Image (cartoon, rainbow, N blue to C red; front, side, top):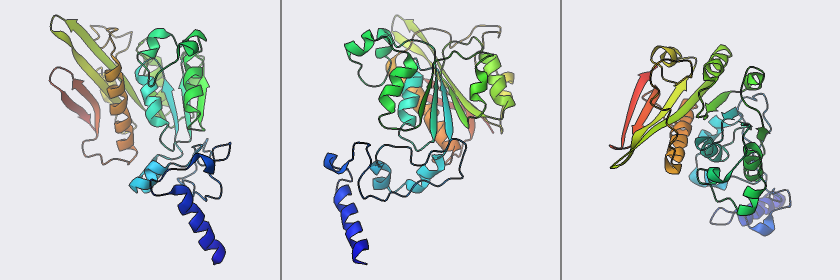
Length: 292
């Protein structure tokens, strides 16, 4: 009994009133000494690695939403494309207890990318000309244990890397090969979200649309019947094909995608069940469609 009381006192000291750990309470590996943190216990998914963080998630415990956060635990997630929106998807995902976050991109992280990515990149880091997946892996592996970089371009020879994932975020602004990628995910029964934006510059400023398209086993036909995902082989004008991107809209697009995934996962209430939504910049309007 005395030992249990001592343990509880130690935990209270470590977590203090503000819920944060003191640097002196951390071992070099980032684990708090003597703190018995109960691991998340969803059904054990493939790739599940236990507690995914290098230190205790006190933000969730302080909010009292651990039971909801557990609904995200154990998932194996993929992000295809880390140009702008994909980096913010990773930033948000890294704060969740998913088991693995697989990164897919074959490009280098260059100077223009620094102005569309989360955080601030030192000039010396840009001079290293690292691959995007390695750049983001170096940052987010400091928090999340399950970041897995793949410096590959998605194509017929690499799509197999997606086969064992639970959910995929498609964040590439290049529609080349998108049709084969979507068909592969649907054939494997994998849910995914495709993001995009189409901006036009005019005399009075920028206008345009930010798009979020979800595809789940409950609803697939809208992608094809209503052309909800731009694909290179499709005829007609692609309203999302312009190359203008702005950092706050990248972050917004990522936030809307993550919120949709969390609603699908039961973290947020989902009364609309929409599989397609657009945000109109000029009027600040969000429109939902394609309800399952």
